[in-house]
Length: 586
Image (cartoon, rainbow, N blue to C red; front, top):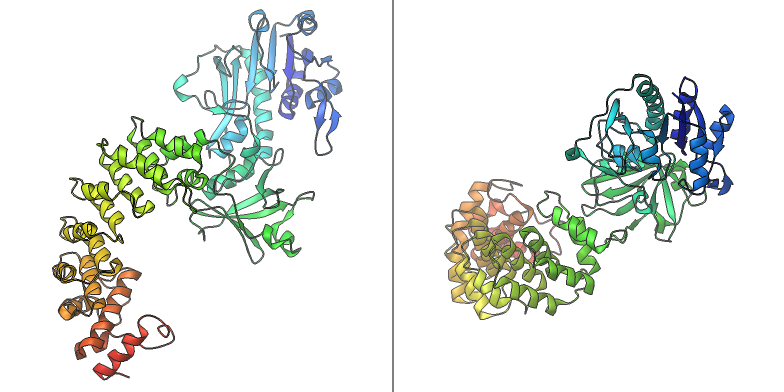
């Protein structure tokens, strides 16, 4: 079959080489004009032009494909078909109607239509990709497919290794399609994904993603584009190779740190070791060698910008909505919105409150509660929006988020709304209200927390009892009686908060309950059934020490901690010394 070939890249040059060796050798090659290439930015011809000339095939490089002169040159070659591969220009009429056009696309269409299918397949963690031979139409890689060949993506594949195999697959598939002329079948639109062009922000390592995703990005851009890490001095550290490294020291991600001879990036849910890097203006080298050169410490221990400046506000908002119900420890896109904290984010959060999707309203409420972290911005405006919206909101999850938002805003915001929400039918809302009311100096708040210590939900009783016993500066008979009423609570956490609060106030009614709890835990037990967290163990220990100092009850002696360097200088030391004096200890 007589053909004309349109292509530009290295990939297209390899396919051209295979095509030229058989009966479908092109009569003409059309490629892009010479351009600046490589690190030196020297002007030179595209790879297809170089290979076509080596093969002795006529080449044209029009500025515009559809200019009359270019169309005439193609017509003069009298092709039976045009073949397009990585050309980089959209083919339009009259070429689409004048010729049958075969397009070589390195993906299994309809997955990864677009400019960067190999890179995006690796980034996404696809198990396989391939090459599709399709008929070119007006849509972006949307024409019917006549042949598809599969190729596995290996765990260690990068762009270079995978593209090399796909060149061979693509060349063979094209020749087979031209030989056999299999029928074209329309693509399934339900399976469409788009391989968008690699932009500058795609190159920057993104700590909002998991370390596995970031490692795939490094491989997907190697060796032709290159991933990079933005440095505090405004330059970039090229990242040539990386390995997933297990636990992170910063669950919020974004921390770059050196650990001996290793360079690590804390990502969302884990750490990534950067094993091979390329310093600004330098050559690739092992990260250990770069660190041995003692670079500026500011370049090896810093935090990436939590505002995610590469993302637009619209992108952050939509990503935040998607991550609302995520199980991830850290919601990076919501956090980025709160860190930005300017008037545009305030307006966006208010707009979210008007949407039908309750996830969007929850995100808007969350952002309004933390706008401007770490320096609060627009608290009065945020509170006014939340209070007004709480009057009409019906979704319990959104109301719970509003309550928590008032907890972040703090006093004096939202008291009336919180007092109303404390009696909501949904436990999530009541719990949010209890959390937000804690620590506020208002008699109505005090009465509300006393009421919540009797809530049917254990977690609410636990928090309200903690708020009264530990956070409240008050010491009244009503408060003590409310704590005492929880000494027999069925929930161990609530009981511990009650005995702790009473012990801090010198109320010995907590003695029997402490002994009961200590019986469950056992002497000097680090875990036990009741004190199963660090705070619970501390609260129970402090209550034990305080009551021993007050009562001298010998039954508490075996449960007293040793007076050693761990406790010297702490809030417990004075009571512990008095306790040992009272019970006859050392």
